[in-house]
Amino acid sequence: MSRGRRLAVTGLGAAVAAAALNAAVAAAARAAGVDLEVTGGEAIPVSGIAFVTLVLSVLGLLIAAALARWSGSPAQWWWRTTVALTAVSLVPPFLAAADAATALTLVALHLLAAAVVVPAVARTLRAHTLPAPTVRAQTLRARA
Image 1: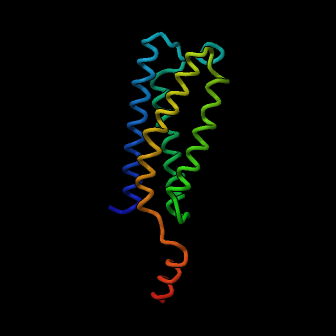
Image 2: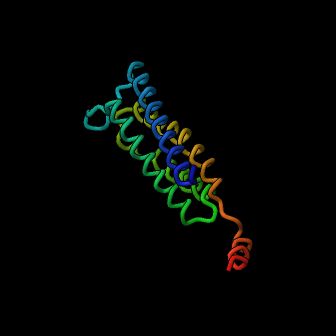
Image 3: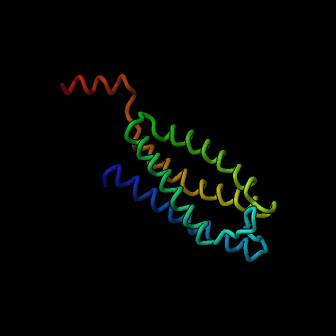
């Protein structure tokens, strides 16, 4: 299996798993009495949580593919990028949630999705790491 295909299969599998897990946790939270309403009284549907988790995970996978293509150390940059983006993603739930229980549940869902997708993709990206520039340059010169 090619490196790109391995990244796609692993990343999409992790995205689907994260979406399903987030849907299950959101449904359990709703059953436990968390209303999952944003400011204005609009409830977030469980299917909406799964869909957004899937879409944003796939966008993350596109970032991973770009890093694999253009970075000499894609796994390292993947970790840096995803830690920063995950940290930023923890702010909106506190701005949009109608109550603390909803905000904390949404934060937990963000962290849960990151805990599933980020390490899975990072393991795959380690296989994409290129040799150090000097070794790589020597290899290219030897081929010429």
